[in-house]
Image 1 (cartoon, rainbow, N blue to C red):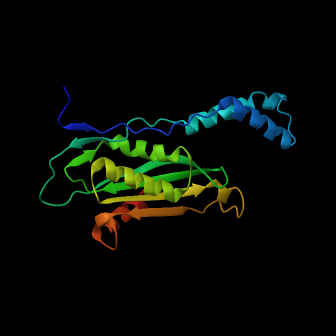
Image 2: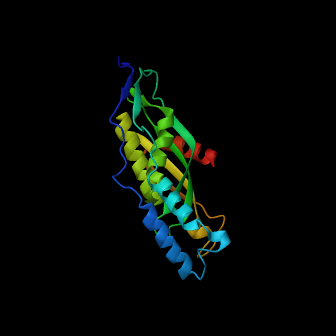
Image 3: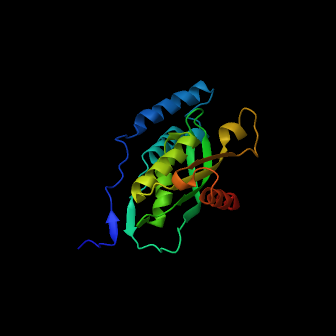
Length: 204
């Protein structure tokens, strides 16, 4: 019998994408040759295949269920702010195909149901495991949290290090990029928005 206190929404589905591992490996052999390397030398033996398998592991990643919520009676004494911070996610910059590492803080005001805590990390991983922009990850996470919880009041803050900036170009190793999206009662200069930003700042 289904537990009435637990509501499982439709499982999140990845796009119908499968990495062609054999083709990617063949292309990496060509890349190594174009770079002046010998893909058959001892140190590079099997490298194209390993890299191709990594692409499949990264892009075909399945985060599992991201939308399990629980019915909960909330106190009428005040408005309860739920925040999960310290969520770590690796993604790839779609402009240079170099890694970026994000620390995310996610908050929302429940409206009769709460999202399972592990689902915040799963939602973040769902959006990170593809060619991405930091701003798109933030907006995607906010949209999915709002959809899963039914809450209109959602805030997401991401603090990121981008290797496309720290290991190439200007090579600013200490540079960080912060993106935020504040919806509903988090938006504007109000107490909820300030509290979330303060918590996110404390997490860095």
